[in-house]
Image: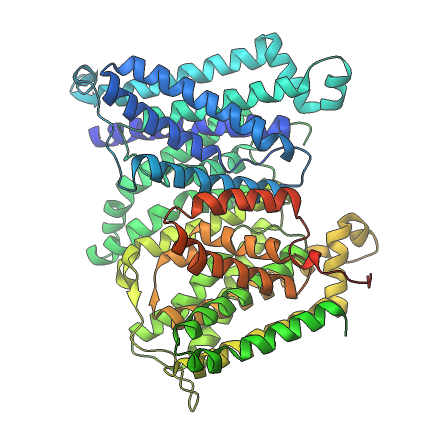
Length: 305
Length: 311
């Protein structure tokens, strides 16, 4: 029972990481109609930068702030240089061009940091455990990730639903020609939204760094899981991204933890040993196929699409 | 014969001349290089059938490469080396998986379709990684190349001409399909699906069959690829492989049959020979090159060949 609770918390923690990625991706798609495969590259950069800055400065928070700002700047630069020309192109062009960007970023990381995985350290005061319930201890850092993730979700909701910028974002998503006709600088709005998405991806990456290995390809691995989240949640919907992310995070984590022991109660141990991990690794895709079968537009389809 | 068809025919003749020339200059290595090129050309043609002609942006095409490869590797693991059987399994299983993936993903369109095909391919990739019997993420060695009776694939030159023959066959099948009634419908769906539905075609079924044909053809390429490398790993299905094949189609020129072949030749030579000889960080060059091709040369290399409009 204790193990179940711990794994459930891990599921939430993975879910909020997925959400930070999915929110940026779904905003960019909902507003600019851009499929950005290079979103994972920003996640990777966030993780690498935070690890390096922490090593150099010795201050965890300085490192996080620097990494976040640099990722934001890189994101905005990428938007200005490459992606801006892609908004009017079809999805195939966007997929290929951003695929090209991934190759570029991965190789640049290999040039700067080398091909071996690096390990992001945690400061001593963050590596302890906290008491969640009597008798249940949970790593402090993972708990912090959950809190930050949920906090960002709330802030994002406030931003989109309660501010002028959010109003413009919503308006841009439903009719961008009209918004620019009303005198809004839509180019600037696009750049801002893209920067926001980049910062969220960077945040997800820098928080994930100390939990998973920081390595080339980490961005694509999570990107494809984020696609599953978005397909399940419905493209362009932040609410869908949150629900989808938590569901996928939970199913994936619990599947990896408990599928093998559960199967072992019905199958022979050796059969469970081979079927368990195999089934666990494909569980979220089966879930995606099932959702699509009943709701091809995802659980929370954005109204205008 | 149109100019493009003439160029394609000359290209195939040049490919046929590779083994004697390589033997003459004492570089048998080039037989291997171009055999690999042609295997990827078959995969690229199969993708072009749905991408270029059908307008279905499948980003998970490498999955069938992997299925074809494992369809040879797994029987070989159990001591079954009969090539006819292995290759039949490769084609049939690839078609069946394409049927399943297509049945789910073709219910959607646009960006959903891209993400879903990618996700399913990645699912198979992880599946390959986690099944330890067949090597898991290390992959497994192919004990022996497929046995095809009198045709001995262990002879590199013989294998080369088998692949060339299958490439020509793929082009012929592609040509027949595209110009058949079925092909017309698929191309019509690409231009205007609601109109095709309105005049009474069940477009979903046509798209699904095209998706299956493409999957089966790529499965065959996978069966050839595992014989070529004599090794099978889940990396065959990695999503960058799908991106690679898609890039070949775009680079050469989608919606043409010669385009994917040309794209496969250029990209494989760039990735396997030219760029790595120059710098180990060649992907840092290839990436921006890809972006530039997409932005400025959408019609691909074939688009550079002038041709009279023939529809």
